[in-house]
Image (cartoon, rainbow, N blue to C red):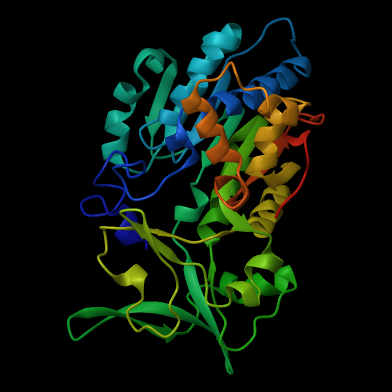
Length: 364
C-alpha cells in the first residue's frame, strides 16, 4: 500500500497533483465546491477566538497557524482563507498556512492552486511544522495511510503479505510483523472470530501522536470515513474494508480472491481503508489531547449553519442553485454527510461547546 500510493516515481498520489473530482477517481467534500471550506472556516474562526480569549496576552493576538495535513494542491485551505478574508479579515491577516503533503507533484502545484490567497502560505512540506499554535485539519488523510491486514485463524492472528507468484502479485499469510498488532485488539477489549479479515492502521496512531507533540495550543479537526472500533471490528466488516477507487468505480474486499482488487494495477488506483476512530482517539488522549466532539459530518455542518439549522436550510434563497446542491450533497444521509465522521480534539485550551458540535452529537 505504501509503494502503490506513495512511491516517488510510480505511486498513485505521487504522479498527479489532484486525484479527486469529476476528472479523477473519487469525490471528496472539497470537490463539492467552496461551500465546504466556507463552513469549516466558521469553526476555525471560533477556535481562534477561544485561543485568543485564553491567551496570556489577549490584547496582542499572535500569529495563527492553519496546518492542513494531506493537503493535496491546497484547495481546502484556499477555500477556508477566502471565507476568512471576507468574514474575518483580522484572522486572515495573521493566519500562517502550512500545507503538509507527501506528493512532490501536488506540492509543486499548491501556490498556483491557492491563487489570490497564496500570500498566506508560509510552508509547503512533507512533514508537520515543529511547533503549532492554531488548528490542524486533515480531511480524508487517515484512510489513505498504509495499513496492516490481519486474519484470525485457529492458531491465532496472522498477517496478510504480498508475494510474487508466476509473475503476478498474490497474497499470502505469515507471522505478525509488529508486536503492536498482537496487542491491538486486547487494548480495545475486542475478540476476532476465526476467519475475520481486518485492517489495523498503526500509521494513523503514530501520526496523531506526532500531531499532539507538535501542537502547543489549539485544536485538531479530523474528517474521514470510519467507525468506532466495536462497529469496525464486527461481523458487518468481517471481510475487511480495504477498498479501491478508479474512475469513480469502487471495488471492495474479496476474502477468497488470491489477487484481491487492491493488488490490481498498483499505482493506477486509490487504496483506502476505514478508520478506527476509537484507537485514534485513545492515542491522542494518551498524548495529552482532549476530545471535544465526535459526530457525523452532517451534524457538524448543521451546527455550523447555526442554532436554527433546519430553518436555515429551508430558507436558502440567498444561495445560488449550485451552492444549494452542494449543501445537499454534503448533508444528505447515506452520502458524505453520514459516511464521514468528524473528530475534534484540543490542547492547552478549555473548549466550550463549539458551534460544530451544537446541533447534535451523533454518529450513525
